[in-house]
Length: 99
Image (cartoon, rainbow, N blue to C red; front, top):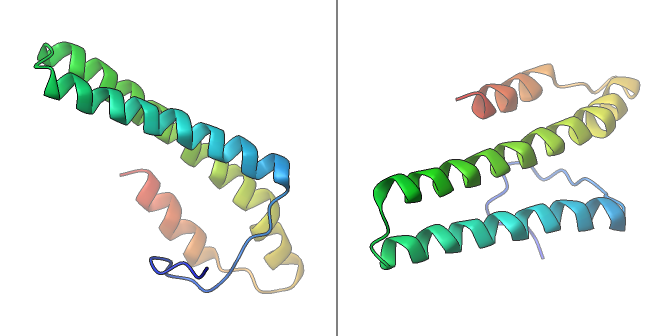
């Protein structure tokens, strides 16, 4: 199934182990977000919600760091070897992640 929200038509092949690790991280983040939503629905104390929200944000940041590391080690290295390196693309995504 094509990625309708993807800006690039490029693809990255990942091992089953890599996919499993990334999906497991996303599943934990999804659970954290559902937990925050439930806290809002249950009228939990603001500080408690903010604490859980910060934990979810930190988990998503860790996911992004891991994915960026893998991108640099695989895609960027491959593109440099093939003389197709797009440093602007790499800098753009790093800039987005640092916001």
